[in-house]
Amino acid sequence: MNHPIIPIAVQGATRQRKRQAPKGRRVDPQALAEVQALLGAASRQADLLIEHLHKIQDRFGCLSAPHLAALAQEMKLAQAEVYEVATFYHHFDVVKEGQAAPAALTVRVCDGLSCEMAGAADLLARLPAILGREVRVLAAPCIGRCEQAPAAVVGQHPVPKASVDTVTALVAAGQVRHEPAGFIDLAAYRAAGGYQLLRECADGVRDVESIIASLEDSGLRGLGGAGFPAGRKWRIVRAEAGPRLMAINIDEGEPGTFKDRVYLERDPHRFLEGALIAAWAVGIETIYIYLRDEYHGCRAMLETELDKLRADAPLANMPRIELRRGAGAYICGEESAMIESIEGKRGMPRLRPPYVAQVGLFGLPTLEHNFETLHWIRTIIEQGAAWFNGQGRNGRKGLRSFSVSGRVREPGVKLAPAGITIQELIDEYCGGMAEGHAFYGYLPGGASGGILPASMNAIPLDFDTLQPYGCFIGSAAVVVLSDADTAVAAARNTMKFFKHESCGQCTPCRVGTAKALTLIEQPHWDTDLLAELSQVMRDASICGLGQAAPNPVDCVVKYFPHELVQP
Image (cartoon, rainbow, N blue to C red; front, side, top):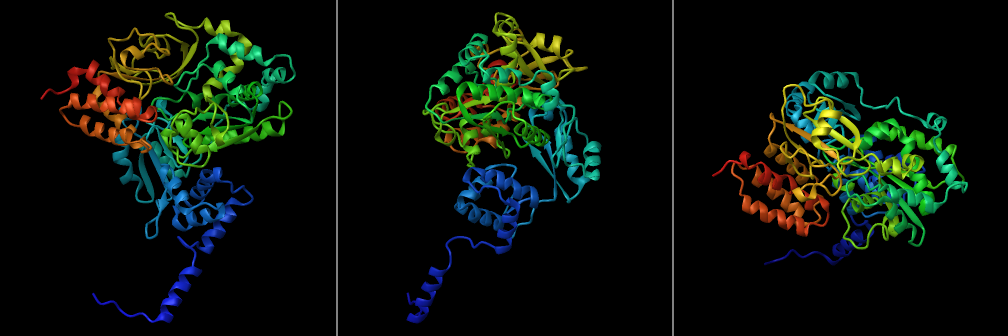
């Protein structure tokens, strides 16, 4: 093959030009100026990457390639790192060169199980044509408002019991922000005795040992799903060499769960006092609060209340409190994935050991807690361990906050004795089944907690009581099915969710959820193949998502065989 002869002088000039040009994508001066103005005097440290991506997304409605390149230069990060983080999270709209930006306004309609049962599919089918091209309509995974099903979000404004008319009216009025009202602010909380317990701790009226012993005696366990004893966790982290950090998980993304949001909207300082008591007892220097992005109103309210608290601190040398914003990723509810996200990275679960208590946030010992666990600290210490232990039923101890949704007359957060049965919960706390519906089945622990038939209505709902049946309580997200529903449809909905939310790090989960969904969408289920797939996912997935994703499918095969069409 003949090659063209390039003069030596031209070759040298070409090499010289290559040496003078920077590697990678060129940074557009205008985009850089816009990013610099947007960030202002804010720190450019790497763990703030997601926070800064939110600033760009909020201001421009998307993340353009020039803005991503400019942000990478401003933060001294590789462009590939910025891009991979931006594309990992669902709430970031990355727009490449030549692509059109999304519509200025986005309407998200939840297609989670409770909302699907309440008519979300009809909304998704009708809204695009009615709202037109100027509004983008998206199906969204659970947005934490299951008791308001079907739920939607116009911009950042939640729409409970959404209809075509209510959504259209909000769009027309430009109501795209949410401002919570009626919550207990700092002044009201203090007037009712708030932060007095914290001051007693700081002043030496109460000692660390007595506080931790009260938690141990109460049997309080982590209420995000894992159920690890709170008092024991405090001792473990306290025994580690400092400095120590705390990470608070308010990323409740489990379909069916909304208890944290409800408590946060009502009484934000109760959990903050619990967090500060924990920080005092364990020796925490900085507290990081990780709040799911869907809770826009809660974020604005919490930012305001934190500013008030910092300005009038209830104790000297109060730990620094950082509020970090999620970006739409269910996997970040897993503690190590959440820590990765707080560090400004993709929310990829870590292999363990080492455990978060030893090597957690920024490589330091970290006390990780769910929001509701901290919400109970003040009450348990003031009322006493015996009071908390005296609340259970059916041989169980304590109280549980059940997020109840689905076919009940009165859905919502139900504070009930641990060990209550589903039948008691429906009859005594939810006003019975919804009009015209008969009890058929239930999910005792959200999408990953399995599905049980109505005939199994006498099982105490608590930690460790559901495992013999292939289920678990998790965060106590109870979804009630009626004779208008099928367990097969519920399993398909949950597996679709898991496929969408798998972080993709490990093959058993990434491929397994997709394969499982394909298999159960068929009219005839290959139960032998599904059983093999389930076992592989449980044995080999890195985190709880892949390990628990098969639960609904296995329960359908075991408890609802009459729904499966036989070949």
